Length: 197
Length: 92
Image 1 (tube, helix red, strand yellow):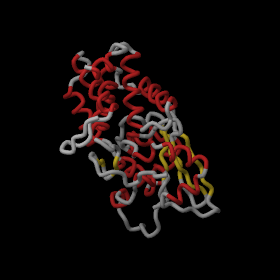
Image 2 (cartoon, each protein chain N blue to C red; image 1 turned 120 degrees about the vertical axis):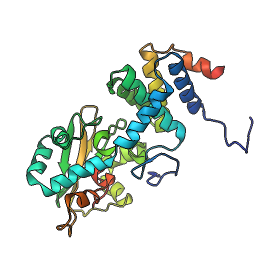
Image 3 (cartoon, one colour; image 1 turned 180 degrees about the vertical axis):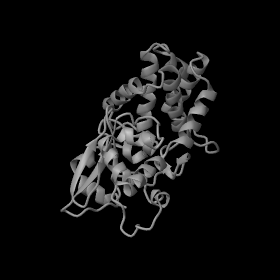
Image 4 (spheres, each protein chain N blue to C red; image 1 turned 135 degrees about the vertical axis):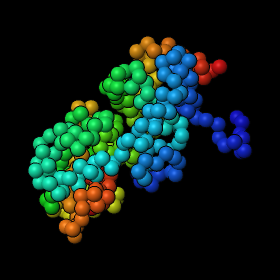
């Protein structure tokens, strides 16, 4: 075994596989390095939770939009010009004082990219995927989102066919804020359901 | 148990959220997204099936390792690369 303290540890086998995959696909003319750069750029600049935040803020200020959003999430986000991947079948679930919603993908990492961007690491980790189903109240408390015993927790399991977005409750004391300012209050975690605003 | 809420500080961050632990993970994400866009007409379904299988196959494996395995399965399974191409390249 060789160690090189000046250059860090050698790449892990999986990293070498990833590099080999890219080399081979490029050599075969199936994709170019520039294609990959362009795709990364696209995901970096055009996707993110800011789109979901805009949807939530609109629903807070416009009751008829809220109704349309809860009736057909995909159509309502398209109404705001939000297209993006992985929101072809978007279901929006609204929190209330009685019910708190939280989203998971127990099988892999299905997530509504078009409104939330790419999923964070913890969403993809086995502990979150297993525990949010088994003991959601305990897990949410550990994640900094303690809920009263009286609040019912509903867990939504995403799938290839259906993605979920949580509509958090509007925080108190925000009556005077503009829609844009309200959007600035909405976090990704609140739209996954692991935070209360 | 850690949920890695704060995670490592490796780039890239996207709107303050960390999606990757290391640059190679970001690259293999982009590679898969590029392959799906260019070779599968932007249809993620075939890749998603491979990813689900890769995770079910070894549930405790790190996520981006499963992602890489899924991409290899996709391109080999659809004949874009030969079955041993990646292993042969690594052995070179």
